Image 1 (cartoon, helix red, strand yellow):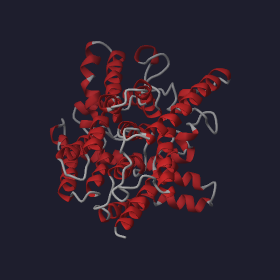
Image 2 (cartoon, helix red, strand yellow):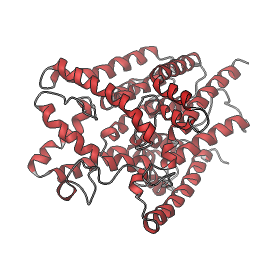
Image 3 (cartoon, rainbow, N blue to C red):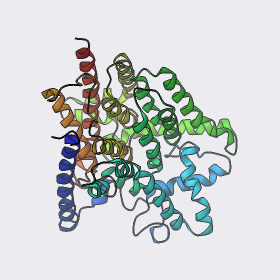
Image 4 (cartoon, one colour):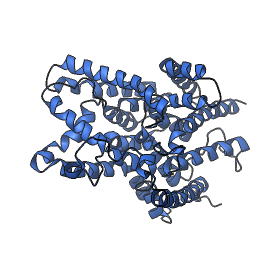
Length: 431
């Protein structure tokens, strides 16, 4: 291979091409020949009861998250956050819905929905735009752009639900590009911007800690907390009441997600979903213990990851730090629905665009990498391809796809193996 060849980018493209081709044929066969609900396999019910499809949706579909949040805007603007709201968004997290509120007043709710979806699609396209503007290899660029947008599972899920999670993508992409061994404030501010939309993105700050950037790490945490809580001071109504209701909604909704794990639909991408699959191998008591104590377990795992990454800060490789930190906001919370897999769009964009993405400090002069490292990199590109391809195969009609159901398991393995490799690289550098 030449110095400009992107071996792992080409391998990701090959796997993704095969999976997308299989997915297209499967969608044709399952959706037409067997009349299976494809949208339900890739996202959620078409008719979710969140709107009147005839006047407020598109066809039979409501884009339920949009309509649910849109109904929360009215009481919020009157000065209170609604108790028991399933979508416990911060004030800035409500901004995308708030922005299209005047369009709803001037025209109707359907027009507001279409404008919202257009803005959301543009935000979700950020990784593909980055790839298109930075790649030195124009061949296959159109196919890669399509693979990272309309033919990708995360894109489809976020658009299908009308989830404002996608508006965090420009910030997550900026973080991934600017994170480096040399400190800079762009990555720090990007973390705060993403966390303002969804607080769990504050976990990206662990990437700064992985390079020993303690000042920037603390600044990102402070900025994230500020972006989450300060807007409550300017929101109408009693600030303390609004904050209390918001916090209660977040905690109660996470606890309620245990039902989702048990029912297997809609799928939960969190690491906690691993417990559901343990039932097939272990007894229910172990699985129930894992679920019931997940908060404590996740905090222990998170603390161990933070300590490990910080301890290995002098030898950490950017690609491995990114893989770990980008997956944490999806894996660590109790509840992570399908649109939180959008981080794989960022990861795929970097693998496609960066010839030296997998280069390691611990192996700077190795022409041929060792077998364990090769296996790990195959795991990463395979997991990324499986996450991106809209594979419609299900265990049972009415559930999400098999790839979505096993997302938490696959990416937990990727996360833990990546941390293990960082430890191995650190030990090798000291030999």
